[in-house]
Figure (cartoon, rainbow, N blue to C red):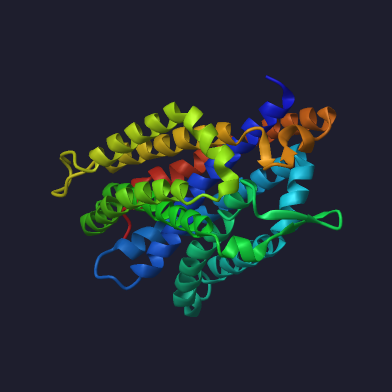
Length: 341
């Protein structure tokens, strides 16, 4: 396995981790807004998870960006140039969301505004992030005077863009519903658990349908990807089987509550589902970063930089991992925190 393949595997791993954590984080912000004044404790449960964890999600975003810029500087330059407006909007929304998340806990008058800002950003940021996928598949970038230009009109009139956005949003809300169902179960909040389980039961099939329709409406320029996805079909078969297992776990008998379901097993199976699908999609997309003009070999950095970055990540993760474990013990495991009123 050469350096370029190792680098793209590291980058894709960070993308997958951020997509899972980000989906739960942004989705929890949306549910906190929706259920803020609900008669159940669903809004409190979402906010209880959200309040200490949004910073962790940003850590993985930084790791992802540094990996992309470090390993594939030409790829980062190309996508950063053509997606300047979406990237700028993402940074702006992240800054606004972070500011309200920080100050709303010390200034009570901003609590309701924080729920609104967090919920809206929880929809807009993932929608902007997922625009990278259709752009990278070809057909939306054109050369003009020696530089790449995004065909904005073609992009915003393409049904594939909106199906990708729909798939991203349903995935975000599905994953966050599963996580919050488990969080509610551990917190012994049956009303919230019943609500989030119901959301997951509805959103699971919708996510699957959105994924299939997205493939059906891809641009003609992306036929190369369809062919490659078919070659990787076993990963998607495993993904579908994992979905059936995860969805089925929501119907298993629950000895702790009157409502059925084992949300933790369901969440683990669904994460495995996305893991299989993500690997299959990534393999199908290789060797292109942006089709057809930019491959991982064209965009790769110098080998000296690659090895330096790998050492940096090894040391950095060795330092961060104990902190993540302590955080998990304090906020996601401690029943005194989980079951507080």
